Length: 272
Length: 251
Image (cartoon, each protein chain N blue to C red):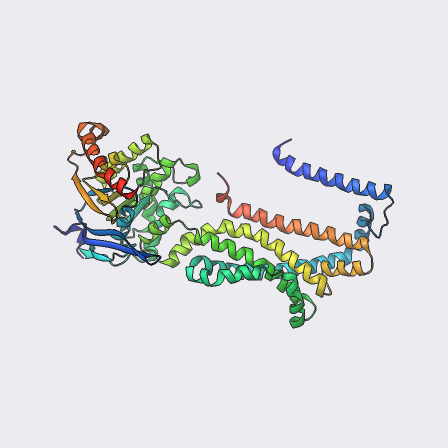
């Protein structure tokens, strides 16, 4: 069986004129209108924009958790019709299961895959090693037996990332994953993400309010405007990889940041 | 004194003080035993009638537990249905709240009409009082599942049934076990109410008979047994709760 992920020329994610509307109390709200974009395999894109511009909705559309009301979404060249199974997700709230150890939290996706007879399930005698190795990658050596409540916010977020990656998903969807962390921990997490990206193959989509985070992590940044949510501006981040904090805080990063700020401000004012 | 010992010793000391004050007041004020017997005479009566009291206490315990077990079963089912489905919630929850606001003592005469005097109305009253807290707590536990967690699981291809099993049920357990101690107390109240009105066994029946004989001592004896049983039942389920769902408390 040939793996469609290996197919050349097919973008990992393709959106064409995608819209999303929902009815609330008789009125139809247009959350997103005619969004078109392509994400190449292994790339990372970021969505930034004012609150309520449909960033999170876009994530749910791509993962198939929400149906699009217009346009077409394809992942690996296949149209998305329902929830995809090859996705890892992480949110601002790490939502670990407090009754499970760190190890068992990380292994949860594999349990689901095995129950569903997914061919990607590794043999169960390799689960533990795989989880321990992944936890070590994110700097959590020897934490397997610990309980989530014993961990700091940054550690929980690392566990949450491991849970999102343990099944080696083709897509990693991150919805403000580092927003609740302090500035230093957040920067550590950026570097961690960069390291993970160098070691594994996944296509990343990041929703964030933090423009520096977007600059550090993304190849392409989409600035969204609201009412209805749509792509207002697109920026390719030209900084070479691996990126450093110095680059992001340096002249080039700061210039891009200033520009994006200017672009988001009018959208915020019109929303208010 | 350690804080733990303090929590045991202090209430016991207050209890002992109250009993002593009661004993002293009855003797000093020469209160008629038929109005208020002294604690020592109650204890004496209890010792003399230990065998019948034991029989009736056992009967009440069995009645309570039968009603309780049935209530836990139905409460779990209802709670899962209400918490798992918005449609069931909208359709059933208002009715459940309405039903719960009926004073259950008012239902006992009907139960007696249908099932006669005896154990069945008492078991049913216990059941009617006890299932509501279980159903509500389980429903709340399921309905408050974080959307992020649901999304994480759905994006792995998890079915609703898998989400329910892997996350819904375990995360509901602390609330479920918390509801058990409330439910067992409610079941106890229910069985004693029904026994008082319509039974020929049980502590409630014993107290009703004692009252009609103006045997105040025995009535107080029954009260003491009820208090002890109530505390014991609550304590057992509180201890089980702590043990089973330690993860929800340690912070």
